[in-house]
Image (cartoon, rainbow, N blue to C red):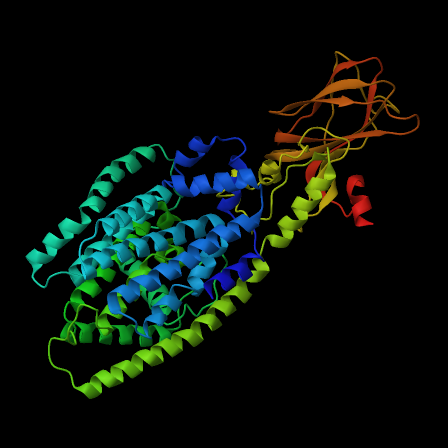
Length: 595
């Protein structure tokens, strides 16, 4: 089911947000430099290395993104199934936990975003592997093979990215949950089994801090303020809007987008789930032996995982909205699943029902029926909610845009292109400026396109990914007549001609279109307030005019044209400086394809 879901959804998806920032830098960055650099205070050598290799071998092919994420997701489900069976034996209701790790709405949102999906599923897979190897040693006895498997899995997780550090939390608590009943014996068992993990952690943390020491961190001009009240609000939203709904197949609200969040849960749902959770906690503390440890495991993991978000600049930018993004709770879901199953299920080490006080057989029978009902509920709700979320997110798919863009870019040949940006819904230019330009997106394809160089007419990409001819619109103009009669504004070699405009333009990237005629090839320099662009003007046919488009990146309150070379006078008939927009006209190089 997991494999089918990911193949189905990702076959209708493509690169998104950070994906394009990473792929754009692959052609200009060596493997080791690309892998070991920090990214927004993260350190993910393995994840970045995988992106570099895939992009180098098969540039801008989302098939590899689909394959890598699908393999990790399927591996996660398989490993967690093995882990739960190792701890609790073969029990039907354990499938509910597997389903929650397979196809929930939050995990679907993360998986669509390749670079984010790699990180999330790597953490879940590594957590499952580490817990599985540890569980085997706790249940069957110490084993060199399992100890090596635990250490290697944890080391590989840290190599992929630093979030695998959180795996230490459930590892410690699993030792306590399945270890000797006396605290001293349990601690001794933890030390004996987890010392390799402890050593790796002690070695890794200084390496991580050193690697990210110079990572730039952006802060908003007006950050959301932290306070005790803000912290409680943050936790409350995380619990009632995301964590608890996930345990019954939610969240049930419509997400704001793939990179967005789930809005507030309805009051009735929040109250019902919170009340049920409080009741389960009370019963667990009253009846289940070591139930408090399972609850403490979830609380500890949530406080650390969510606390890391609360004390970063992410909270400063969006406040409580950050905790309603499923990305920041993805690693909490399996911990909640493990704790919930421990509270209601006998482990393979329990020789009798692990309760503090005797429970009537009828009560246990009702418990088993309730667990079967919970499994049925999850199996029905999860596909429905996940399908609904996919229906909500599918219209945002960047696949149609990129399929068109990549196909037409390959067919264009050597063409001058205005370096516009991809739609902001695909890459947010305010956060990922370097990855939002067309030149950056197409860089891995190594195409013979020229960007923002003076040209007769640019081609540019419209909102649907099609290349169209470009036109300069709006802004300010000088369409003559000029001081030099029919010549308009005369520009001679070695002279500077000032051309007045109908108004001033503030500092921005503007496009300029010059209409001219001349009897010989010439070279001129266009000067504005803070920019200077040199360009060649070829001889135009008799009775006709020539045209040149160029890009100006400055404030424009003055315009001068300097003649650099040319036998004949260049007559500037008209100038327009304004925005550049795609027309409805197809470039000549693509007209055969259109026909």
